[in-house]
Image (tube, rainbow, N blue to C red):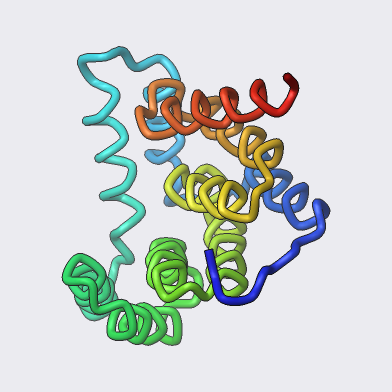
Length: 186
């Protein structure tokens, strides 16, 4: 996963999971609350559309400048320029420290740069700002798997499914981790 093995106390994972179940009440989240409620009862025909609407909403800061910085980070990430992506996301965070999408994006850049500690820090920040950010939660799960902590990864994936029961990558990851844990039990 990285050049230096990184060990995190299970307290970190517990904290991250605890953050996912806390709720912050902002007036702007009312429609997000409705979308998350729809996601809970979504079926195969509409769950991806609802999830995309949530992610689109999370990617909107309310400022054209901040949204442009975020898009530049996303474009750099897509092009594989992880250093530039981290820089764009950092600029976004500097100007809008309450914007969870910027932390989640920078965590992806850091992860690809094998900077696991900073990636986890940013995922934590994203989850403090938006406890139901299932993409940020998924990043925590992937990191836990990479750190060979399948039990923690399984807890994170289960928490995602409580928010987004049909999330395909999470269902696949949970199956993978469960198979790994069953193999360990033999």
